[in-house]
Image 1 (tube, helix red, strand yellow):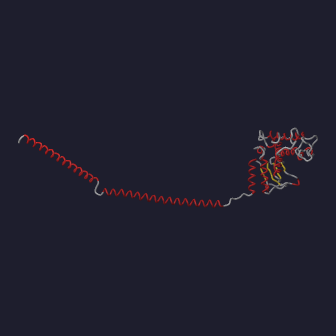
Image 2 (spheres, rainbow, N blue to C red; image 1 turned 60 degrees about the horizontal axis):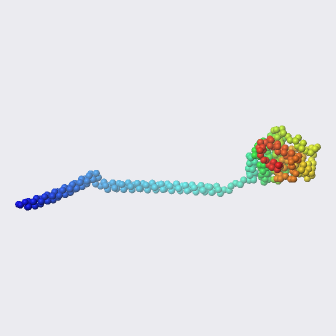
Image 3 (cartoon, rainbow, N blue to C red; image 1 turned 30 degrees about the vertical axis):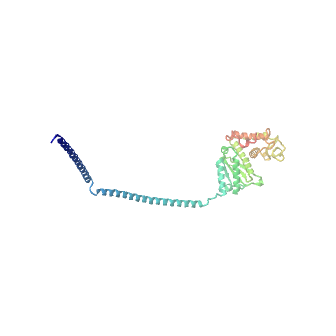
Length: 342
């Protein structure tokens, strides 16, 4: 065999060797893959017995179904309870509404006039500290006012009059001793009012049943009597000498002369009058009470009335000064009785 043939044989053997090696390598690789798959299946087979996969799946599904059924049952129970509660609540609400409607359907009691009068009386007593009586609450030869309608109007007039005094005045005055009583008008005696001060611890002011203007005027007049009783009883003060000194020469209270009274039909004193009216000539107390009532009820002054320098103005000034000096509730105020005097 020549060299050329040897060389060709060598190449052929090398190629064959390469093919054999490659074929062997492929075979070994395939065997390892088969072994790996077999090992994996065996591992799975050992960790999970046959049928367990389906059983587990069924168990999960069963648990889920059970929980779902339990939840559904609870929701159903809760729904039933809620419906029962709501039904009971609606029933109670309906019963309450029916009860309220039944209560509201009953007509409210309308207070009687007597009850309304008592409310007004209590308001006056609580506000000013005085007492008020009427009807059969006392006995008097004047006769008590019993008509509820008239009592109602007199209470309004009394409250209106008392409201024109400074705040706290009546309590400072010792109003717990003072009682206003409504009586029938004693026409035969021309008696419009009376202050009973026999015992200062219990003072009664009787006010006759008249029109509104006179009820207020009498209230002012009689209250001034109580004020004078207070000034004399607690301070020993009396303006009698001062008033006598301002009267006409030789005049004596009780000797009536219309010429000296500003409002009398026989008046001829002009701008220099001594008394407000003829009744003021009775005594110094009535003189003061008539001046005070006139100042409280009058809305304007007549020409020459209370003119500065006149005896009647001097008496009014003394009265006003007494109230300022003896009552702290009056000081530094502008009470009604000062409004017309400048």
